[in-house]
Amino acid sequence: MKRFFISTLLLLVSLFIYSQQAMPTDGLLGFYKLDGNSKEADGHIKPGKTQGIKPATDRFGNQGKAISLTYDLRHNKRSFISIPLDISPGKQPLLTISFWIQMNSSNLESGILYQSDNDWSQNDHYRGIYAERDNGLIRWTACCGSDGSLRGTEILAKNWIFIALVYDRDDQAMRLVVNDQVYSKAAKMRDGYPFLRIGPFNGQVDELRIYSRVLTLEELGLLYGKNITKDTSDYVIAKRADYKNRMLREELDKVKLNTTYVVAEDKFPIHDSAGSYNVIAVLVKGDTFRVLQIVKKSALLLLPDGKAGYASISSINGDAYLKGGSYLFHEFKVILGSIFNFTNIRSWFIAVFFAILLYFVVKKYDFIDNLLNRMGRRDPMLQGGSKSEGASSGNILKKIFPLKRMRWWPLTIGAIFALVVFIGLLWDGGEVEWFMNDGFKLIPSGYTRSIHWVLYITFITLIFMYIVMIIESIIVVGPLMAIPRVLILTILMLMALLVTYYLSVLVLIIAIVMLVLFILSSAASGSEYKCPHCNRKFTSSPGSSGSCPYCGGGVST
Image 1: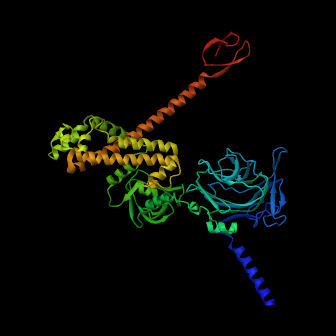
Image 2: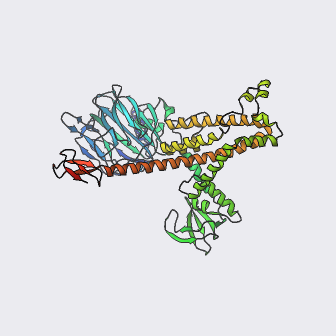
């Protein structure tokens, strides 16, 4: 009997030790036991500032092992804890916060845990969770920044609840776990206050943990004490930011180690270290250097004088070319790479040239089809001279193509593409970048914002139009000559894309200038003056003369 007792005791001790060790500690920024105070368990963070808190009984019935807070609007009582920790996306790209909470009432909106140096506000769009009313019920509500809010379950009073907030800045995702239930939403956040505030609310809080990473569901299950079982598939965060790493790798792979490069620009600055702005030398066009090592986003170079220095990977790819390569080909790639850079005057000249060329193409559009028909030795009448043959053959496509009006309609594909993308960049440039590089799929998935669906519908429509253009080319000039026709029209589409883009930029610039002029003229015409006769104030344009609108006395402004 004694041996059985000792074995059982050892087993219980082992289970206790294992349970303590099993708690996730990797990436733990702070663990607040909240045993009646706001001290961080390991002393990594200064104790939080408190107001009106009291020791409370935890979920196991242990007195003084939790903290009680009060929120009484009638008597102006507000309890809170303010922890000096910045959980902004800029400081903590990945973040997991878990805690236990028991609300004494379920009919009062309040701040639970959020970024602030003051009481909660529904106008804040920072990381955090609140108790907010939704359809008559108070629910756990996590902030998702410009993407709105994520609603969880309704709040039930007198129940201990496990809460976990998970934020991923780069992948713009937010996950809320309430007990064993997972909720998910996109979250585009901005930086907030360098304080983490708890309260004010009516209830108790216990065991606050803050991690600088995304915990797994298994790890959250250890904190909860049970497995997370409901809607677990929603916890998976799609790696939307992977395309940026892929593009960076492609940029790095373009630079060849132990290879000599030739400077293509008038000035090529050399820096003293990777990422530094301190210039220690300047190479000129025609100078050479050798790439010795890649260091982050820079490269260690061996200069002509035998010294070493650093240059950014983007500078090497844009302002130099491999020895033995073609300078003209390099310049052509540079022009193409910067063709949408509206701050480059050369790009504007190219756009103007393309606009003039497109004007004549639209005027002489029939000439292209006639020329291709003659080259293919087809009857020019088949491409639009007469529709009688098409009608007699019963081929419905020949009844449709070529169109009688807007024969140049394929050029609108490029124009529509440019216009939609330009508007999208003004709407949400980051989402357009993601969609263009990684987000577009024939079968849509991962679309969480309205702009995604606008771009998707536009792209699918343009793809359909392009297919129709190919079919039209086969009908109009025959299968053989359809290939050069499609190629020519594709080039003209790209020209139309560029011209439309620069026209959009020009319209935007003109609109901004007109708005500024309007504001300035309104300010100038709306100056305030005081009547010398009645001392009343009125607005009038400067340099005018007339009478006071109140007393009628003569005034000059």
